[in-house]
Image (cartoon, rainbow, N blue to C red):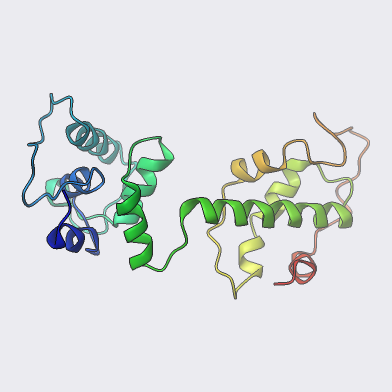
Length: 196
């Protein structure tokens, strides 16, 4: 399965889609046990066809090149696969993160979620009438107030999922009588209170 040249391939700065299809399935693209086929039922062929379709639909953006020679960041390809529920070898994912000194995906999600929920509660202390949707909008700028701890900001939809049921107003739409126009959250104060 894995030998030195396999791990050298995993550590490359860029992968083609063909290389990715092999590598995320613990196969060396230079000496494959399975040949990729558009009609193949194996995991490598399925991964290759799916990534190719995603690239053709412009859901994947190469670092350089185009067509079959397009080069992608390995992280971009593996995150896209994982986010869409496709298989990525845990050992390959860990080696990539070790090589690039990144924490694992699950560690980032847990820390980020807690940070954003704690920040939301502090915003609600400042602006108690804010509905969760407005808090989510305000939190889009949180990452820019924490320069010492670079964050990849989650989407507004993700923040809103994290805040579901946590609003002081409870579930559902806020009452129309709530006044949110006079209040503007102070994210600098929020970050200070969070200890960053």
